[in-house]
Length: 274
Ligand SMILES: C[S@@+](CC[C@H](N)C(=O)[O-])C[C@H]1O[C@@H](n2cnc3c(N)ncnc32)[C@H](O)[C@@H]1O
Image (cartoon, rainbow, N blue to C red; front, side, top):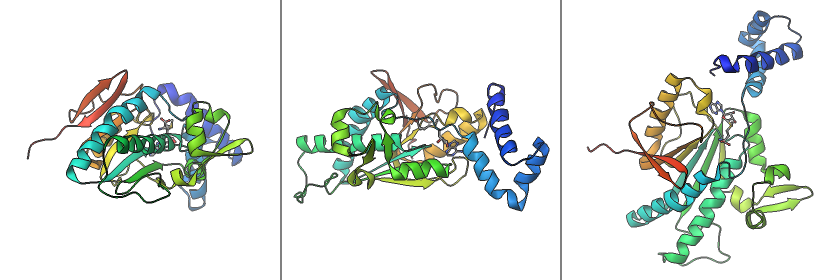
């Protein structure tokens, strides 16, 4: 993890909380604890304290509009022409799951709308599944924090977390349980949560789209460059990468071209001729 001078105060504050909790009276003592055998559990706790997990459904909606109206539409057209019927999208740094569930809802809706305009090569089973065959959809949601992954897997959100979810989505994709909203099983089945540290070499391959938003800003420039290079390899040919609205690939790579529509921005993998 990288903390520049603007975030030193944050780092110090979070470290002091752990020192107090562990009844250790110096940073050096705490460091000795972290590198010791019995400090392994503490390292995980420190990590939970140092990650920023802020997220929301439909966060920065213009990007999701671009995703559904342009990127997904293009993907479905090209895949159908090739007779490939699988879509794989990865929310890298998914926090408590809202980004991944937003993607799943938009893909399910996008596919249903696509079916209305394009005939399918197979007859649909009844009752109609959320994703009609032959299409298969997988949304991979990954993070470095186990506690946010657990929350995402649980898929239960309070009223304030639901503020940005329209009633048409709430009615179709959530069950109201007391004062909380639980993601319906049919939608949950499209999303798969897994642990991945974006700094490691091995990352999930064969993605059509990767969303890595508001994560890279916590990496230094060299690490950002390495990550973008890894994302390039993790994407299928012509695949798309979305970063946060305060982030950009400018100066990090020349292997992606920027696509900008109605205030939304995405980056498409540039293919080198073989
Ligand atoms: C601010 S949240 C962004 C959530 C979501 N992408 C969004 O934009 O709403 C950043 C997430 O990145 C995760 N993260 C930070 N460093 C990471 C790493 N090295 N590998 C994987 N995830 C990481 C954090 O745990 C946190 O959940």
